[in-house]
Length: 544
Ligand code: F6P
Image (cartoon, rainbow, N blue to C red; front, side, top):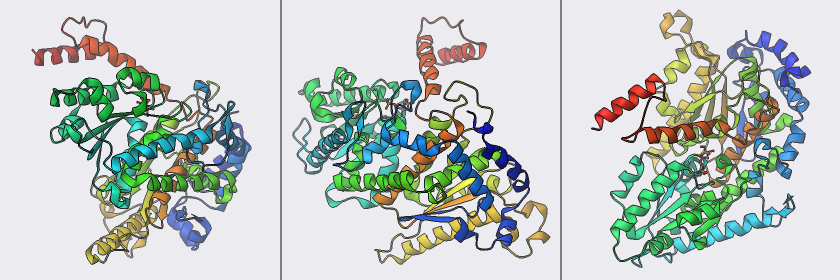
């Protein structure tokens, strides 16, 4: 059934007719204590929805919609391993990856939690071997640099986590440098290789499918670089000492040359963009140690329990998702800015771009009908204070309505006595609070604004959510990311789409293969459109 056929959707449409004419500043005047009405806390995380264009009635209608869409039933199916990724006929079990040891979950006749922990323990052993200097390169020297080669879900999550939690490194991990390489053109890798020591470098080839051309091209370049640096060691020795493969396709990793002993596995029921909790998280474990990685998993598991067990009215992922539904489907806002006020979270926009847009950037329902309502908005973002000097002009005075997520930690640098850094944190907090205030309320926040010329006015009414962490730790980071994962799932249930496949990325891979051939010297170009032909000819001319 289409979400539009529910009673709640119809009610929300009538409600939106009035609400779309209201201003957030008026809502605050009418109800000054909105924060206690629309602030929701869970553990070390606070969600402030008071700067959204909502009333109590909005929230209760949104919750009615979630119930009419059987969100509870879908959530149970997710956690219990039903094949809800129907186009690929498999479950989506990222929640199992952070389920504590000793719990049980049987999926398709297999007990999986035990396997999850066996894999984590194999990963711990590798981490300990590297940290303790016992993993030796081909010259017998220990490893001091790890390069993760992967792309999309095999890159963005671990990359984001390593940056976010770099201040939480245990002593044993500090000597190890962890780098990330993803770009197909080789530029990141070439830059890195020019100053790495092959004898002390370990490559982690992360690819669920082990067929992704971007990753394999970088992996091949890395292998050739190693071979060129050593005449005496054979290729099999070099690969055994300097490559680890993390994949759900062990046979493909083996054909590429990575022996089973150097492989870490995960399962096809782990979606790529949901995989940082699996052995794809190896770089995170290398950065934080096995214990630190377990804290990330524990935070995510706490959010899983909260999502599964808490009434919708107090349920953070449900609330943040339904606010998105309200903005997108009823207030017609189709742009979403992710604004972390924390340099450590600089990679969260890129991560959420994949998580949200690859999951819900779809226009066909589960039973193959075209949607006649909007789904995933366009998402982008940047560290908030940097974005203030870049695209905030549009947020404040442009023509587009944009919903904004402000993400910030209340406490930072409290365990140092560096007064300058402490002051910087205060500055950062002040800017975060100032910007969400102006975006929501407009220039009504200062006196006399109405006398200013029109080009100096701020209209406000941009809906803002603030996600306030007590502090950024492995645990709160796990909570935060799991909250966004579940948000995406909730929205997919409302929109009746499968968030766990990504057929929209396949055609590009095929067409690129034909174009690769057309770039060759012999290629006939007449099969292409005139733009592509013209570009091919120009490229050929420039390469003569
Ligand atoms: O092409 C998109 C995609 O399949 C993503 O879904 C995935 O995260 C990424 O490529 C990398 O895939 P793999 O881990 O199989 O190399």
